[in-house]
Amino acid sequence: MEFTEAYKQSGPCCFSPNARFIAVAVDYRLVIRDTLSLKVVQLFSCLDKISYIEWALDSEYILCGLYKRPMIQAWSLIQPEWTCKIDEGPAGIAYARWSPDSRHILTTSDFQLRLTVWSLVNTACVHVQWPKHASKGVSFTRDGKFAAICTRHDCKDYINLLSCHNWEIMGVFAVDTLDLADIQWSPDDSAIVIWDSPLEYKVLVYSPDGRCLFKYQAYESGLGVKSVSWSPCGQFLAVGSYDQMLRVLSHLTWKIFAEFMHLSNVRAPCCAAIFKEVDEPLQIDMSELSLSDDYMQGNSDAPEGHYRVRYDVTEVPITLPCQKPPADRPNPKQGIGLMSWSNDSQYICTRNDSMPTILWIWDMRHLELAAILVQKDPIRAAVWDPTCTRLVLCTGSSHLYMWTPSGAYCVSVPLSQFNITDLKWNSDGSCLLLKDKESFCCAAAPLPPDESSDYSSDD
Image (tube, rainbow, N blue to C red; front, side, top):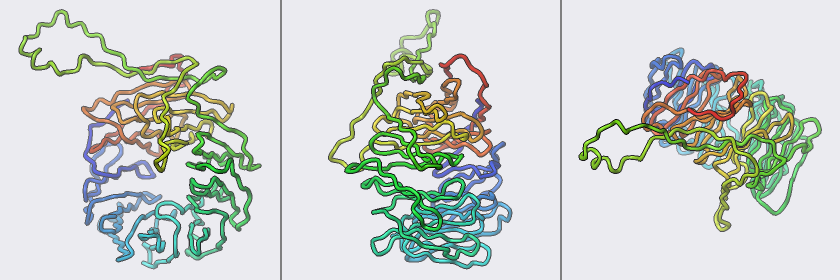
């Protein structure tokens, strides 16, 4: 892999949908860089520190959330002199997002008083009263024609269907939830899935006309759903729960056809490849070096030696490190907190939050565990290559970790004191954006070899 030098950032960074640009927040400045050369192509000055960035789907516009004001500013890459400022006044702005047509901005006010659709074409605006959430509870169809917005009034949750052409309400129906958590359209736009808060295990699937197609409740009297995700092909619905299990439903029958447990003790007949991160000291022959006594005394606190990181292939049985959350504290760190599908829907990776250093990779074609990655530090992020079956993860260290069906390997970042806290792929899979606390860099990520007989690889 090839890495660029590090560049300053102080907040969000993201690729444009067309993969040509990178938007970087540096205090109150929005810096637009070319993805290939990383040269600055546009520089915009906002009125306050940038808290949030989102590109329009056509990559021509970009909005900045200045939530300390609170205010939204939008900019155009095609017409740099064009500006847009949205201020809700005393109502405030808690969140903002683009509509699929890239010509409307949806803002949610503080305390979820209203959701407003602002037009960049004719300055018109439409209001939806009492949105359920600020950043959640809004989902668009894949074709961009309709929006589903969750609202709550009179102690009841509702779904509002709006046309994204004229933003008129096409229909409203109540849903059977105590406290709706979030909503997602299915990839084929034929159904809407919603799920309840963790206090009530309930997953509901509705048709756009308001008919309840399926209701699922795995158990009662316990914390329920923690994460939900459609597979890219639209055939599977994955539900991660606080009971540390992953359940997968079929879109044809709406029945559970796979249940995957995250156990701390892995035994036969498990056939999964287990990769464990280890430190390997570098053996350096210093017998012929002559160092003065003053140098040795001045460097008595220096590390004893250098090392490199690599994966060891471990056999079963193995006991994985597990943390038991305290029973007297809210929001326990347990259950499936991270869940992501591969682009071909064949694999899904999960992290059980009570085992934060373990990443599980499940094979949906054979309905079995494909691999386990045992890291030294808690996993911060794990993202799939959008073009092939390749998973990249980071743990807040100076290394990247990659997995493919052929094996797993570690890559050291050749930048001084650069610890990767987050990472993103661009849409064509050719480049990775790596974030440190106050800087970022990019890495060219060539496609992995088709065949590899060595499961364990170092940097």
